[in-house]
Length: 142
Length: 86
Image 1 (cartoon, rainbow over the protein chains, first blue to last red):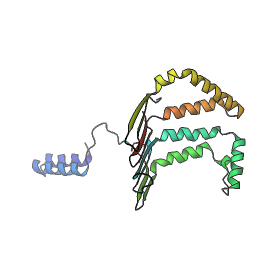
Image 2 (spheres, chains in turn purple, orange):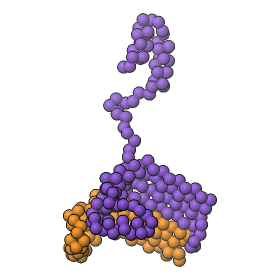
Image 3 (cartoon, rainbow over the protein chains, first blue to last red):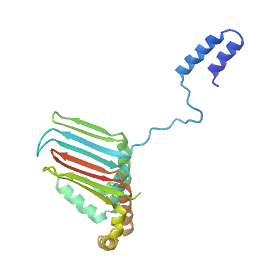
Image 4 (spheres, each protein chain N blue to C red):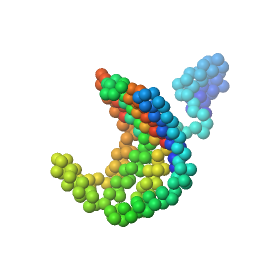
């Protein structure tokens, strides 16, 4: 029993308020602080499991509008990201050289699997909405 | 969990529809001799490229285990393709 409810009952016992008034006060108290069922623990928001990409386009390249709906488990992204740790260093060096030649000076040897996993972890919060007159695209986690 | 069923559905522009239900475990069992050869080939390729074969097998296993729930749906006019892994 919480403190405010006890005070109301004490006031009723002392005769300061009537039973009717006590009932109204308790009702008001319950409306103000809805009681959680006993044993219930406030659960954190469930973590998203899937990355969704939804695209609707009314532009007609073929024989009608285009619709795309992709659902990828985040676990699959994590598994894919872990595979990057298998790339041998000599291959990474070659990729770096080619990237450099193409004008993209990114050093992939500095990219650790842990960084990529952190990136996937933060995808939970990502929501991208692109609204174009002819097409809509949404990227989100669910 | 390993994928149980892969569903492939497609609709051609002519309106012809096709549905394919692929039960993964029975198909893997039937193709196990070929699968064994493929794994051996993969291990040799890993050794040739100095990639850890154990790590590669573990990575492939993780990918396989994470596949259930994947869904790819594409539609363009009367042509449509759906691939769903359960």
